[in-house]
Image (cartoon, rainbow, N blue to C red; front, top):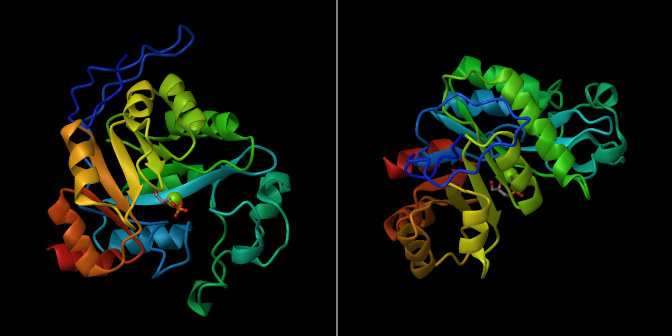
Length: 271
Ligand code: G3P
Ligand code: MG
């Protein structure tokens, strides 16, 4: 079994554990020029099905969203450890069972037109992504100390719900532990290491985790850093860029993909 590199050669893959079923070969991995962030977070409530639909309607073929575990272990689309900012309920994600989460409001905080949007499960989001023809960039965003469990649940859900003949999904994370579990459970899926700035040991980490791409914060991302990552053969995404001028500059540096809350604006600016 192989893990795919940015070039799709799949030459540095880790063998699956003995207990793992062989994975089907999938088409080579290539980042798009523009990717919606948390759906299309400036235009629709983040990490909701409405967000996925909005991004797709803007022509996005890829969408990033965050995934964490409910109190009872169901992977759901959500960004914060606490539910307060999005739902108004002061409670932690890690202690709230899915049945409770499903009753909460995740659209009203954003705009009245989105009242009634729920917190979706990963399973619901994958089903919609298939319907819309969108490839997900699943950011594993574990609540404290649930890195391995979150990655295992994400891997299980993808293996069960994502069609074998479709590219992706991409699994990305700041958590190296989560990426390690993803590498071992679903080795053929591409992985991305996310970081605020390029870590000193990035090459060793990317090699060990068999990453296809690096996703770096755009703020203070320099041309020199971009060149270094590209020279090593990795794809590179920058987040979160909502200013067309900045997006154009990063693309000139050699960045492959702009992750943005404003996919319509950035796609138009980049042509
Ligand atoms: O995928 C990169 C980006 O989403 C990481 O930051 O906090 O928006 O999840 P955050
Ligand atoms: Mg994210």
